[in-house]
Image (cartoon, rainbow, N blue to C red; front, side, top):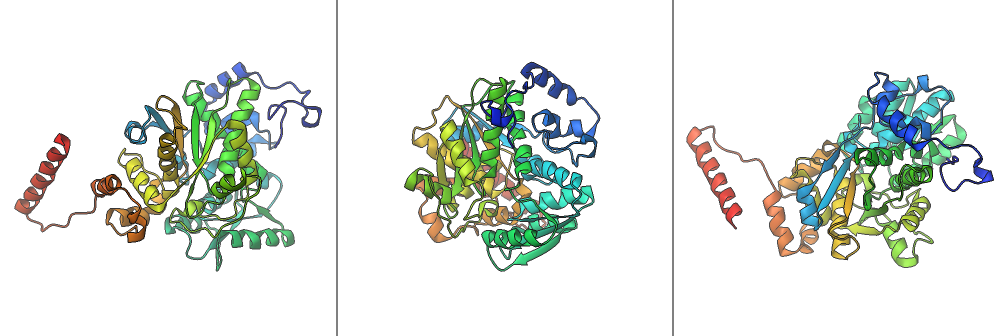
Length: 432
């Protein structure tokens, strides 16, 4: 979607229209936070002045999404080698992922246009968000998922919200192909990330982020890379704020992919992002298990205009970073943890310096894939081949982070001995 404030004004984009006043917008957005109206309590629709995509705002479909926390991450920052690290936790949305910010916008458009059915292909988070917002709007929803390639915690959400769930014997990209043909034959509204209204909702965390930082802009924002709409949307949000005069510059936006699902990383290494070859995606970080991302061209443009980078993370690096984030009391789904894993590499390469301010975007809640977490702490997650690439320090850190349940007899003396042993171990660790 292009508005007079999306880019440099031109005749083709309606550039002659007066853009909103930045000072008035800051005051208005802050005032709406004290309103009791559901549309104002939404961290997406609170910024509706910058995406006029529906005619009747009273019919907006919202679950009071957005307004997610920006957490200080001192331990993870120290691990990565920087002094100032924050995490924008989009997993604190109503269905537990960043997808809610885009889905409230797209479902509102679908409802206003009179659609009865909506559909998406999904690795989990999109399906949960779509099913919830469709149910709220009184619409019927269809979810296409790759068989055996989705975390059950996410699939359970779609079922609970009443979606018709269809598992196809293919991967995510195969599901997209079937769905694309289906919507040509039936009046079904497509809600995958190619839907432009989803990007309008997903750009709003950029507004929230700088508002929470008192309109100061961090040097870097790092996002996970799956279908690549998130980086494109945030890039659009920052660019529009700069065009309006809300901020004086944009941050560098970097994208981190799983090494087993890294088509953008390969493209940037091979040809600077001029072309992209799909890959057969394989990673336990199911939310980014996508081999043919739909929004890669938009993301490449964001990387070029902001000066960001693309990195990749192995399964071992993702697991370690997820445990490190969890150890700060925050937690996230596996796909979110690639941001910290990638940050470590960018710092080691000298692309991010110690004094620079960095925000990592955590896209999903830790309960999205509890099986992953349980297997990690039981030592059952990673294969011997995956751990063979870890350094001695990383292996030691894995051992210290794992917290499997301790099974004891129901005897006070036995429990006391175990506690004394645990406390003694902690004291030894503190003095080392």
